[in-house]
Image 1 (tube, one colour):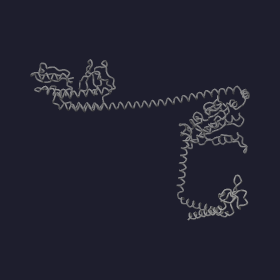
Image 2 (cartoon, one colour):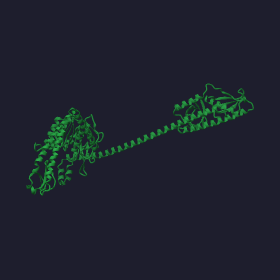
Image 3 (cartoon, rainbow, N blue to C red):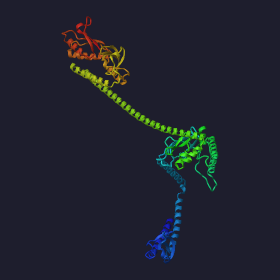
Image 4 (cartoon, one colour):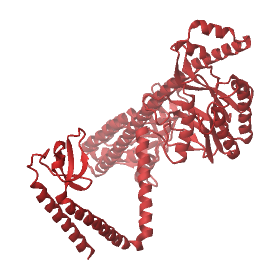
Length: 630
């Protein structure tokens, strides 16, 4: 219903406007019209009329042009229609208010939710605003310290362009609680004061601060500041009086957890009285244990800070060559006013300056010269310190790069060694499988010729395996002079440790488990580590596979031909070697001697045979061959 009534009002307004335009359009081509347009002044339709025809048009003047040549007149013929439109607009506004009120009433039950949403939207907007401002400033998060101290590293005022601002280190509260900053006018003392206070406030409000990472602040209960000149003619306040009123309020409310910032403390009155009053105020703040940063020109405050614990001097750097400030804060030394140098630069004659220098006492001259020397030494030390820090940073970066390269090389070395070990292990596994296959073939072979070919194949495989193992050994090789009886050495061919029993010219006899065998000296290595457990288990399993509970030290091949006899003897010798027999007997009989001769030829090249001979009296004589195994 409300919307229908509102729609009717808007329709009436349009009708009235259309009626006005129709009436005014009939007047647009008269000679008194400045421009053939209909315009609006004060929410009423008017016509631009030439000023000289003012009397020809009956109506009300609402405005004039800047030149005065045009009058904006509401003709009397549309006066009532304009009034009707204004009345309708009043009714329209009333209806708008009613509609809004009606719509708003629908949300009465959701008041708490809407208020909560509004607060959340404000909070989110504030968080995003903080983030954008932090990015704009290239700011960092300040650490919150439980100790009452301020440490601002490479800090600058947020209203100064970060690309041109001088970054300063400002610290307070660790070795001293009051910092007194001196230096020339326009040197940056007040900006330093404001920077410290503003950055602490920003951090306390949850904002990132324009300072280097690692900066920290303490959450103060109050930050008091007396900065600037609050003199007032109306209130009859001088510069000194305005400062004292502020300081009086500060002293009444300051606590041990407060930060106080005082600009030009004690200025605006007699220098002697002002200096002593400033010292007393600083002593009072120290007795309360509040942190304080103050700027001053009084030399008495510099001397006071030098001789009293808890106070520290600082100055803003001044380039004596260019006679201009550098805005660099130096904590640890008092500054000089450089009044004579600055005055000379600003146009004061040298005659006047020399006369002023003559009026200084010897004591003042001595102190100023001493401060100047300290200032120069401090400046040189600061520069050298920065160079050392930069070199230290570069050295640290180089060391980190070298450490990374070393770790990379070490990792690659471990990978190569691991791959080599895996490859060697695979070779051992393949060799064992092939050896098992060859041994099974030997067991099933009845031909001596086939057996010899299979044995050669096995020996070749063992030789290749030994070569591969030797290439992967990182133990030191042995020399003959290093060898001793009962010394333990490593045999790559068997991947086993052995004990030296006998040393020959270029070979040694080793005891490996229950087996005695001979190896070349250049095939041995100094034993450092025990062989791989898996390898030992594999070798042990092979021994168990072929070892028998009991074996006769004699084999009888009577009645066999040479080929069959050699095949049987070959298998028998393998079994004897695995079971650790030193001597055996081969019974072949006397006969024609053909079998004996064939067996002796076979024994000459057999790898397990050390020596052989015919039997003696009581051993079987010509019908028996005694064999000594390696």
